[in-house]
Image (cartoon, rainbow, N blue to C red; front, side, top):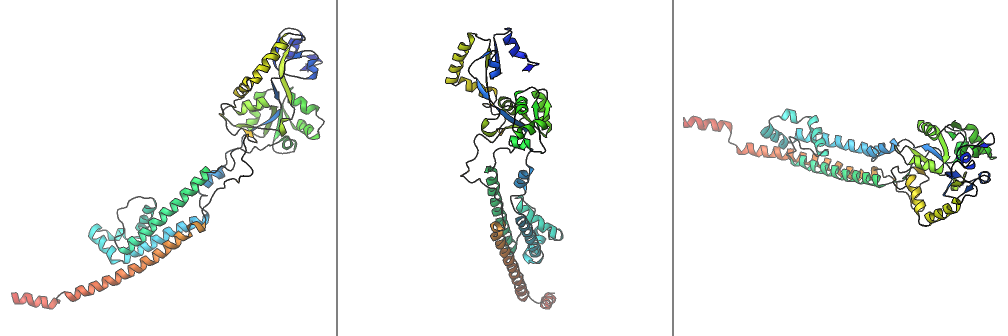
Amino acid sequence: MKVDGAWTGMMSQLINKEIDMAMGLFITMEREKYVDFSKPLLEEHLEILVKKPEKNYARWWHSTYGIMSSEVWFIVAMSFLLVGIVMFVIIRVSPYENRAFSAEVGEASRLSTFGHSLWICYSAMSWQGVDYSPRSVSGRFLFVFWFGFIVWTLILVTGAIAAYFLASPVSFSMPPVKSFNDLAAAGGFRPALISGSPAEIFFKDSQVASYRRIYDRAVKVTSVMEGLKQVRLGGTALICQSTTARFHSNQKPCDLMYTHNEQGLMGRRAVGIGVQKGSPLQGQLNDAILRLKEDGTLHELYQKWTGALEGQCPANRYPPDNPPASKQPAFQYYTLGVPDVLPLFVALLVAAILALCIMGVEVLWDKRQSKETRKAAPPVNMTADCEDTNI
């Protein structure tokens, strides 16, 4: 960089022959007047470094409660109450349930309450055992259909959850700033430029109106670390070289991502090794760089030092390297609706009605059996006369 017309830094040291070479210099026409450059090691361009969007809690809500629609939740709740009410009626009315209570438990008043009926239904839902299960045919008939309703509902919910977790409609984060035009527009994000950097010089000297607006709105920082601090605080997007953006977006805590600009042409510059004017090192460096490019070593080194090979911070680039094919429809979340569970509810409703009918048959049969028992039994007076005769 020039200050008051004089070169500073490594350029000044090369010109004054204090050093033999300087690594990582941008190759410009102005600099080539004073020093020689090797063939380009790589090409840099400007990219936008932003903070990753916060976690989408709507996705968490969907995985917990959105698997079933509100109508389906209502149907499940009504099914629970329906079975609880019918089971309560059966336990209260069916003579076989009352006899079972009296003979086996001895606590008919406690176990024949509505709360205990709901507890029986809930135990079936959670697959937990209870101290009592229906003894009558009507109660067992209803219980079998209730258990089937639960099993099929769980199968549907499990399938919907599996499809939800296998689906990946968006495998990358969507940054709040996607292009330099977004930064130029008056919005919630402000650009940040490092003072004296090639990025600041590019926007300062640009004749494009939108780029001039970026420079006018930019926050000036003195170093990359200060710029990263501003980015992590939120509301700021750091404009820096592509290598810088890719390196820091691949570092933990993995809270940064960079936006790849239009075709990577924004502020493109070649980076090479500077040597003294007329130095024989230029030819030797050119030969070495060509060999490193041909065998892929240079590319591997670039990938290594930018963190791309480790991949310790996924989804740190927008747009992604391998976006989903546009021709293939994205897999959508599946929410269980009324048509999915309506057949189960109808079957349960019919089973509840049939259980009440069976309970009625049980009551009638019990009354008939009681009458036949009373008819078959000898009269009380006759029994008393027989006892007197024996005396």
